[in-house]
Image (cartoon, rainbow over all chains, first blue to last red; front, side, top):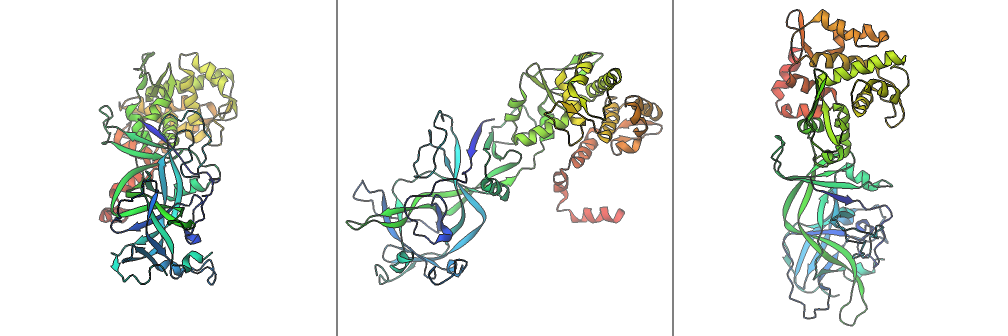
Length: 157
Length: 345
């Protein structure tokens, strides 16, 4: 019976390099987080092929204010907006997952550091397929309602 | 800290090149392992449909921790579930600002369900039987090591090893076997004889090799003798150490059961049976040979005794082995049967 090793993330997994702009509760050591929306996001084909990504909108946590509220205050979780483009907004919330979710991927051969995070200790011969759980995520941002149209006033202020 | 918020939220972008991730819903047991200082290596075993094993189900995959097994089930979702990562996004000529970037989109998650498969039943189904007929070994070797047998089981190595120990399975000549009741009965006779000859008391600490050497003079593979001694040892015995000490109650039950099962259901006068049983035990344990010790494993049609049918003993072993969950499962919803049972008592 074929058997594939599955590595668990070590307690010493490296921290992500760029600053994580999300609320601290959503932070994970590698910076990975989960965002669920109903539907799909469409955006025009980028004109510049060298660009790695397209900014489609922004996440807003209207009630999140760590300067005023205590870190244990979780009321802000009840409301999150995701603005898409200039005309649509989704309302959602942060949810604690009943069962944490492991983000699993193929282990890169030779301990490649695609994510700028996980450091492979086994430099030699990782020729067989191996899997790894790179992160365990305990919260997710869920937008369970359909997007609603908005006037473009709030955008870019 | 909150500057991003004040200026209108966290930029959300989507990567053009998505990475490939699978999302796995983790059970508390796995989360515990992740949080442990030295997380163990897990394995995903996938089973192709097997024509040999009769109880083989269609292809499926299991996730094994060192001693637990979970079935993997894929659950599709119509939503888009993005895996995001912090990134610096530059807009035109502006200074790059921290953003959240979706780097993967998953349409399915994998759920884990604790496996209810019994390692004992499965190993029993695939291990060739080692029998001794009229002094000659009767066994068809499968040419497979224990490790290769375990690799084919959709269960964790820990569960396989526990079942292996329970069946007193052993490796000899690059093959794996499970002993028949008859073979067990004969090996036990050799062990008991060896202890008498060597003047070794089995209920005190003794050198495992001393008894094994003496008992193997009758032609039994030493791995087989080892397996039996390990099975009968007290729970606090260190199985990797050179010493053994047999558990009195376990040994008495084992001797009685194998003696009865070795008769293949043939009738045995109760008095003959208890006499033989007593003779098979070390002198000091003789009086322990009481039918009450093997309650549930025999039936008494008249003055004779015989081993209970295979199916009945199988369930008895299952419950005594502590896998009560497995035996309770089928009737979990039949509340009226449960009621009826309690009323009879």
